[in-house]
Length: 533
Image (cartoon, rainbow, N blue to C red; front, top):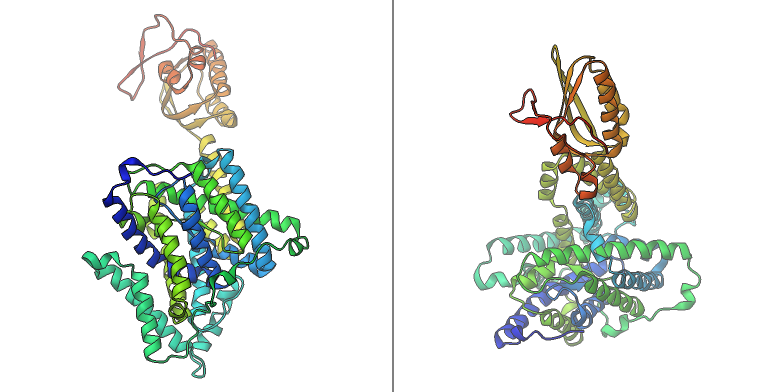
């Protein structure tokens, strides 16, 4: 449970937590509403998740400065669940996912989620971003988005036709959407000093709402109920009994994995922004499991740790998890005290905020970083992104992980061999990893060495060699010596490749063989009379 740290119970830290919570609240409110709309559920469910993420999870979090709430990265998956199984299906899937997160946290396997390839994570976020942008274009254009990203692409002509139809409100909706994005971008760019502490999303929402109200534009606004508690719908076991168990299991596993990965990666990023207490990953995963179980039981949206709100929390000077708790309290007070004000906000404004968020998820800088490590990583990124847009989140992520594993196996088993031959001397260059899978290739290269010559094996670029390849080389050495040839290897360098002393001591150097220079290298290397692995 939550414990106050002695060094942060000062008046200064209390003040900083209070001010940071206000900034986070102002940013979280429109995002909670917009993410609910994009997920195809009533807006109050997004607010409920934000309240649970602050007022409950804030007390038991393993990442004190991380903010939990509804995440844009889950909108695609939640929309698919709601479209196929309804709100009752979402509830039982969310409860199951939360319990699975609890089990993973108690099993202390949270660190596994940090081992996912950045290419897959970035590809997943880009796929979600593209899907989010495509769906919110329809909302801004006063139309209902389709159930699938490819359908949204296919029906883009219908969207353009609606924009050109003077009998609809599409043009007014687009104008408000453009105004929202312009204000957001300009505020982020030019706001300085104390003004910079005010979230651009709040300024954009206020500007768009005032414009809509003053001009009496006939646009749809947030359908917020009179009471936030009307959004609470307890788990209906009778409805659950009629659902396909495989569908529940499938979506629960996917939701748990994606929510956990997003939370823990966000926590790792938040840790880089401050010098305070580090994240306890298993504890954070348990907290998220409790939060999602509660959200499922009351019929709210899934939650994750979210990097955008968390980074704003840190940059606003938060010192403890009091800021997260307070931001949840402010959400609760706002929807109870001023629901009429929130009902004035145009839906097109929230859609524009999510469109902007979706575009930010497509991180072009990440692509350049991946390219620095080779085009194959960019290929994994691209295939993951395309698969998510063309199929669904599960297929895309699974394909990305599979490709990452294949790439790893390929890299760890790839061996490049080249031979430089002269009249009485040959140099065998080995690059990569020499494993039993490379035996045919290595055997062919050794067999191509002429008899009665001196073979130098250059291992400067060899990352790994296994027992099978060593035996092949030593067996070939005996045969080559019978023809009058010799083998020169740096056995000391070879021993250094073996991490354990148990394996290294089996590669013995000759006691007094004397140095033998290797052609083309400024070092001397010793050939042992006998060697065994």
